[in-house]
Length: 147
Image (cartoon, rainbow, N blue to C red; front, side):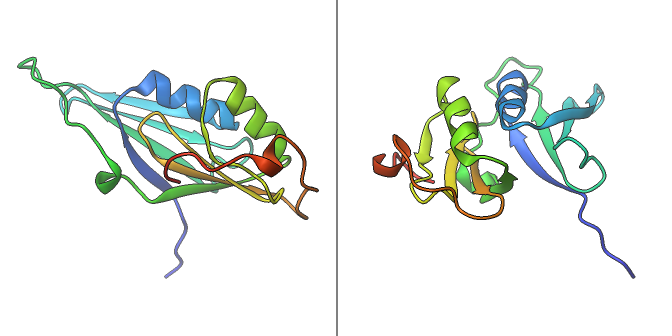
């Protein structure tokens, strides 16, 4: 029997903020299902040209009908991290930082960085090919928080 990777599911609390975050990374929404009977939405995202290779499924459980607070998700309910190869780690980190995203582990080595989504999900960014030469402000930037 052959096996094929399909997707990684992440529980999210704010669909608009989460989709906007993954759009900043370059992922695109490929389909969305709002399931009224189950009171949840499924939003599938993929890198351009990789729809059939690897997807992220964002699962949003709607707030309870009784008006109580929705369930809060923390690191114990989320996956460890997602990893994406990028063409230029400095450019994507700058784009994210310009949009207000904290760079938790800056790409000091020109190779690897970590950021977190609006739901505190760790995302690893890895430079495609050879490491880029160290450059500022990344080379001397300190880690912030957990990654």
